[in-house]
View 1 (cartoon, rainbow, N blue to C red):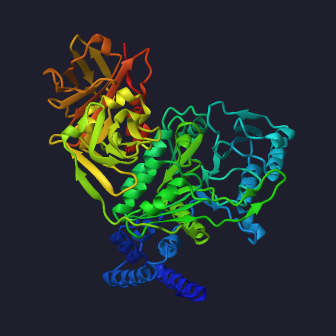
View 2 (cartoon, one colour):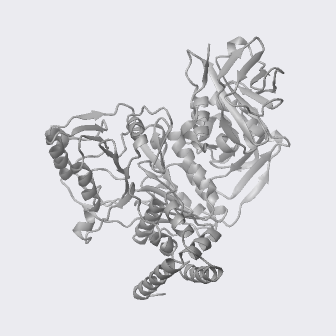
View 3 (cartoon, rainbow, N blue to C red):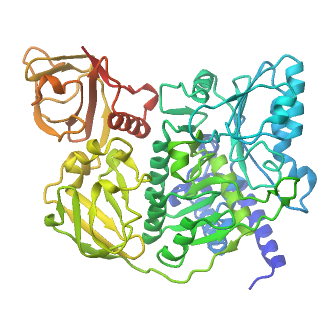
Amino acid sequence: MKSSHSIYLQVLLEKTISIAYAMYFLPSIYNGFNFLGWQFSSKIKLSFQNTNSNKRNFQLSLGIFLVLFSCSANKPKDKSLLLSLLTTPTDSVKAYFSYPGRFTDLDKKRNVLEKVLSVIQNAKFSLKIHAYSFNNPEIITALKEASNRGVKIEIVGDKDQNYDLLKENGFTVNIWKQSGLHHVKVILADNQTLFTGTGNFSRQGLTNDWNGYIQLDVEKQNRSSLVDFLNESLPSPVLDTNGISFIGSPENGFLSQNLLLEKVEGAKFSIEYLIFDHFDAVLSHALKKASARGVQVTGVYDAPVDDEGEYLVNDFYGLSSSIYKDGNEDIVETSSFPEGGLLHHKSMVIDGNVLLSGSYNYSSNARDSNREILYKTENSYLVSEFQKEFNRVKEKSYLVPRLKFHSFSNKKTLDSSALTGNTLCFPENIDSPVIELGTGIWKTYLYYPKLKNTKCILLSTYETISSGLTHGSKSDFLSLGGLWDSFQVYDRNSNISYHYSSPNPNPLFHSGKKIISKNPKYLSFTSSRIYFEMKENLPLAAREIQVWIPGKNLRASKVEQPVATEEWYTAIIPTTSSERFYAGVFIDTPEVIYFFCFQDRTKSNRDSFDYLLKQIYLNSDQRNSMETSCVRND
């Protein structure tokens, strides 16, 4: 085993060599990284492209890189060594982290607190603050000074938290009215400088807990949208700015869960996360499946480790995935109760190129009840900084030992007789199953934690934490029979899984085609037809059309096209006048599926349509220009 001194020397040598070759052979390293599938920011890419290169330099520098990479492959902290050297913060986005520890240098320990004070001190005309715990006396003093120089201060807090110190200093705290926690942590100065992250603005939250924050100089064109987002009045379900996508709970909490699941399901090499609270069994299922396909999954939990972390310890597949318990002991005794000493992150890095973080813990409360923010970015600087933060926290943590190992999945096949109406039966007992069905925007996970040693499942009894269309009414969801053309059932506590696939699955649910929203600019009805005109000429004539009225099965037809024009289309829709309050129309083409929905002017979107529209919006390549509501019909 290497001594810490020898490891230090090796890392120092690697850094020295890496810097030298990064400077001398920049174009070759760029080509080499591209060869390996690594990605860089546009600034770095441009610098590479503007530098001359030749074949000899490429071969030499790529060889050096491969040697360095192989030498440090067993040390996760060094995986992104060269990448971190070549990425620098942009002017508009920065990352900051707290440094707990009883013997940490005071200046370093006050790192985040000083950044918060700086944001407040530099505010010129307004400060908007959304907080859960907010009792740091230095921040409150800075706010009072800002107020005295004319800065308008607005504070939104939680109904159950104590804000006496703020009130004693003359501040009014507006209370968030909904049922859950007001759990976001945001300071917005002059509608421009955004400071947000995983930590509370409390006495110990900024100094004694592990936390990560980002600071943005918000793009000018998005500043009013950010204010709307914080006020929960943004029409779009996602705020995109500075290369970061922000999603708010509870209104769009299901999108946060779906985004986490989608990124975990798409991981190819590694998933590394730091988490305070983890009570989402569906996410645990996705993490377990990732380990089964060879992804190295590493989670570090606040101590004591949550039940879902304990579950994963012994249910990961193979040997490479693991769970750690945080070792932060920087606890401060107060007159009421001890504070600090937490791993308070809610941060995940996937394949070294995607970051998911914010105030969002992995739980149904965070999704459905609390005011939360989850953000996603592929900004190379932010990803690199949070990757280094993960490695730093992990080094201060303790491996949770495994007591058993799963090395393979025992797959079994079901036939069509297994599913009858609302009941699914198996040839043997199954425990706490998870059912997967559908692809793309239809991807759904059903979780049944209370089922023990049973052969049959009543499908409608799935748990709240289940994802996808399940957030709408159960009758709407269960009426989509085509979803059940193919499904997989996993025994949560074993390596057994059951699979069923229809000979002719409905392509709408199982083809994996991208679904694109294309609201028509004209829509009218006759007794048996819907006429619609699209905003652009699309290849729709003679295409399959499927109409879904929530609570009823899909109804199939074909798109017709009058001879007189290429822009008008008509379709025979088997509906009655009483069913035309709302419906979704899916038009299948070889490349994509086009979708639009309509509703009576007096009706609001049903939950299921609301889900589909927002999920399509989330997955769109150009979502800022997309329609996000149904066409209104008279």
